[in-house]
Amino acid sequence: GVKEIGIIVGPNKEQVIETVKSENWNVDAGAEIEFIYQGEPKGLAHTILVAEDFLDDDFVMYLGDNILREGIVEHAKKFKGNNYDASIMLTEVENPQQFGVADINEDGTIKRLVEKPKVPPGNLALVGIYFFKPVILEACKHIKPSWRNELEITDAIQWLIDNGYEVGWTKVQGWWKDTGKPEDILEANRLILDDIKTKNEGTAE
Image 1 (cartoon, rainbow, N blue to C red):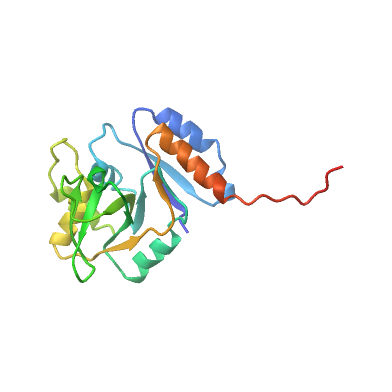
Image 2 (tube, rainbow, N blue to C red):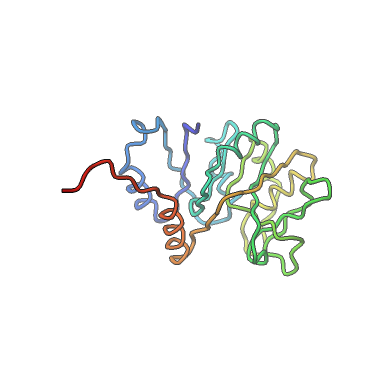
């Protein structure tokens, strides 16, 4: 259902633009693609501020190194159906210390988000895919840079929670891969190949 796509690009923008433009998106998917330049990597919340003119409606923020077996259609429907101001996707992990982790209240609502906690409140980690209403822009303008001098998206979502906005969450059922390292890309490739059903409708002579 997405027809407008804004791709955040940095110093290697020529490579990204060339690769994306090698496909004919207008014919195949009816999508309009806009490239939005971020001068320096100041954090995920900063990319939202950079894209402010583009973000005039509800949107999904999809970090490019995420691959989900089931896709995001059902998660998007729940975001819309529940009229959330923001919705995050969570998945169970064995090493929550390496991720942003959600601390969930007994009633199932989100209490707080913790980035790479030494003592995790649970094992539900944030997947790098978020659904937002434009109010997230206000949140991004209210937060301060973190210890690594970046505007963290977890801080912006926490601002929404602290200020009474509705932040929901959905759980990833199938596999999810963060393909930030070469071995992760190879593993994702194996998982996708495992799902492909072979078919032969011809005859061999």
